[in-house]
Amino acid sequence: MSFDTALGGSIVDRAAWSGFSYQTTSYSGSGGKAVAQSITTPWQSSATATKTLSGLPDLIARHTDSSKTDTRQLLADGTWRTAETLTTHDDATGLPTKVDDKGEIDGDGDPVGGSTPESCTTTSYASDPARNMLGFAAQTITNQGPCSTAVNTTTIAASRNYYDGSTTLGELTGPAEVTSSQSLKTAGAGGDAVWTTPARMSFDAYGRTLTSTDPLGRTASTSYGTTATDRKYLPVKTVATNAAGWTTTTTLDPGRQLPLTTTDVNGGVTTNTYDGLGRLTAVWSPDHPQSANPTLPSAKYSYQVSTTAPVAITSQALLDTHKYSVSISIDDALLHERQIQSSPLNGAAGARLIGMVDYDSHGWTTNTAQAFFNKDSAPSATPVSVESGEIPAETRVGYDGQGRPTGSTFYSNGAAQWQTATAYPGADETDVTPPAGGTPTAAITDARGQQTQLRQFHGATPTGTYDVTHYNYDAAGHQISIVGPLAQTADPSSSTLRWTSRYDAQGNIVASSDPDSGTSTSTFDDAGQQISSTDAAGQTITTDYDLLGRPTGTHNGDASGPLLTSLTYDTATLGKGLPQPRQPMPPTEPHRPGPAAPPPTPSMASPSTRR
Image (tube, rainbow, N blue to C red; front, side):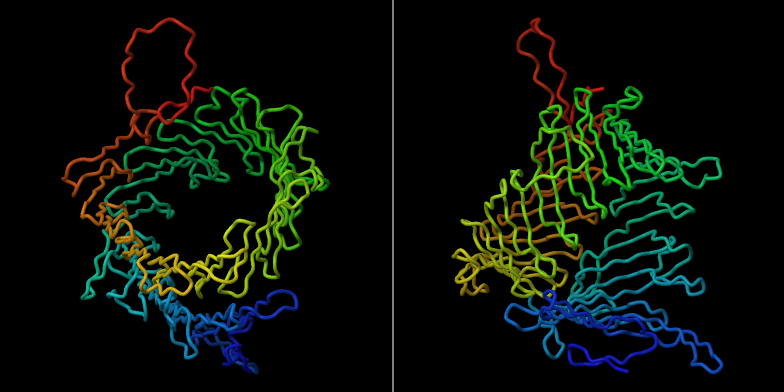
C-alpha cells in the first residue's frame, strides 16, 4: 500500500511504520483553507532480529525513525514555500549520524539560500556494544552547507565529549559520565582545528557531580552528606564550594529532597517548612531568622483544595509593621489563575485589590483586568463577580482559528479606548495596525521563522508605501546584518546604513561594524569571557577577571598596559560577592548632641537590621 503526499510523491507503507504520522495539515480555522503541511518520510533499518512463527509471517525487529521532513507554508502572495531536513541513520544502532537542514528549497529540492543557508550536523557516538551502551554523543560538527565528518573552514560549531576519564574520543570504560568536554574555537584554512582547553568533571559512585573545572582551571565542588539510616544514600546535606572557596550549605529533607535550610556564603540562613504533601508553608529569610522569630516567618503560604469551592493559594509577606500583606490566587477547575485578591499598597484595612483573567474554551486568555481597588472586603478565597463597567483597566483579546491574537482592545469602565489589530496574510507576514498615532508595521519572516524585514508604513494601515529594514542570518541563526531603514524601492546591497556582526564558533561576536563608530573587534577566552575590545581608532581595552568571572580591572592596550579602572569586591562576612563600598569622608566638624540617628537603610554594603 502507498500514500500520495502533498508534494506529489508517495510513501510505501511498511509493517514497521504502523501508527507513523506521515502527513499533517493545518487549516486557517474550522472549514477554512489549508495553510501549512508537514510531510514526514519514515525510515527503517535492516532487520536486527527475526523470529520464525508457524503459520504466521516472521516477526522482524527493526529500528525506525524519519529520514526526511518537508514543511510547507502558504505565503501572503498565495504561493507555497517548502523547507526540508534530511536525516541519515546508522543502520546497526538506528542513531542519527547526519542532520542536513537545507532551509528553504526550490522545486528541485536544492537550497534557496538567502536568510536560511543550509547547515548540516554530523554526530559520532561513544559506545560499548558488549554492555549495550549506545547513543552517547562523542563529537558533533555543524557546517554551513553540506555535511563533513571533520572540522574545516565551513564549520560553524563543534564539540567533543570524553567519558569515564578516557582521553580517547568515542571510548566508554565506565558508566558513561562526561568527564571532559571541549568546544571549537577556530578552524584554520588548512582544516586545523583549535579547541578550547578541556572543561573537566568528576562524579561519585551515584553519578552525582563532585567537581567541575572550567577551561581556565576554576573549580567548583559539591559534597553530599548522608544519614546512617536505611535512607543513607539520599543526601541530607549538600555543600557547594565555588572557585573562590566560598561555600553554600543546604540541608535537605531526605524523603523528598526539599531544601530545609540554605546557608549562603555570608552565613545568612534561609529556612523553609512544608506540609505533609511537600508544599511550601513558610520561609524565614537571612535577615529575619527562624531562631529569633519562630512564630513570625518572612512569608507564609496556605492551600485551599475543595470539591465545593475554587482552588486557592494564599501568600503572605511580612511587613515592617510585623503584619502581613496578603495575596490570594483563585484558580478554576483547570488550574487557570482566574482572580488575584491582594492587600492594598496603602495597607487599608477591610479593602483589597482585585485582578481578573478570563479564558475561552481553548484555554486562551480573552480578558485581563488590571488590579483595581475594592473597599467591600479584605482579600478572601471567594471569587468576586464584577461587571465590566466597574473595571478601570481591562484588555480584551480575540483570536483566529489557529490561536493567534487578532485584536487587543483596551477598555476603561466598559468603554473601548484603543485597539491594536493583528493580521496574518500568510506564514511569512504579520501585519500590525496600532492605535491612532502609531506606526503600522509588517514583519516578514523566512522559513525558519527569522524576521528578514520590518516594514513601517506611512499611512494609518499596513498598506501602501513604507520604509523597510532588512535582516540577514548565518546558518547558525546568528543575525549577521541589519540594513536600513530604507525607502521601499532602495537597493539594500548599496546602502551605507548597515550594521554587521561576525561570530566565532562559540557564538561570540568577534567583529562588528556600524555607520557611526566603524568596525570594532573583540577577543574571548576559553570560558567565553570578553578579554579585549578594539575600536575603529585602534584603541584596545583589556579586561581582567577574578576566579568568579567578575571584572576586576581594565587596561589601556594589553593586560600589561596602564590601569584604567579597578574593581574590588567585599570579602568580609555579610558582604561577600558585593562591590566594596567607598569609604566615607571623615567629618569636618565635631558631633553635636541631637536626636538618635535612624537605623541604616539596607543596602548592598549594609545588611538589614530588621529582626
